[in-house]
Image (cartoon, rainbow, N blue to C red):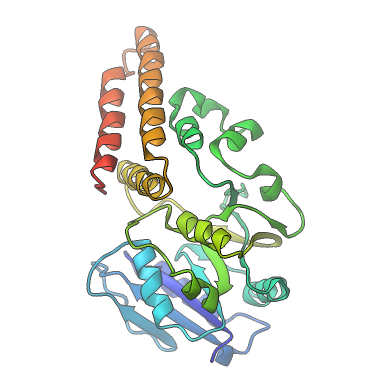
Length: 303
């Protein structure tokens, strides 16, 4: 049995994953024999190549992030799972440092601090989502306030945890780099495969709460994440909206979410209509139709 199973869901171009694999193979402070690397190919149009030292799991049907993770974990043998996005950059002692941080925590889930290439926080630690959080993010007139701490607070980011300097608990952790015991992952049933993209890690961690498993951000360990570059923004927005409706339905607030997003959509339309009086490039009705379309498609569970 290995100490660590690194599970990498794959769909797209192999090059970033091959770079990550090389990064993993050269990690310091851990015996290479104690690290297994698993790539879960989610029926990528460019199949992942057979690679020395890598276990490639080939799924029969595309199912999205959570399904790919589940398939990878099913092939894992390590005590600890490191579930990694393909666009991460890891420094040479990342695994050793994360193990040193999480092993004393026992049955727990953790994430390192994650920043973008610009050095900005990616707000790893977050509060469990509510209809209010979703509506606040949906409100386009508020987008100008994104640099402020209060905007991040009202959208559901756990600002105190994200800016902490020592390991601290939070509600849930962004899914780009999740570290937890394999036994814990399997005990709570892994990812719910109804989610195609987004919210699957939130749902997993809500079930961890019910199982008494804490979640920690480890700011002493910092890695870099590209993020958000794998698909067109309109499609990403539909994935996110549909996933939020599935999550809200599962945990009992879908009606509140729908009402909140529709009310915010009409607020956006009112503000855009005023803006259009001064700027003919503002298409208030186009934006209205698009936003209502995202909601309607999410109600139909379309991705």
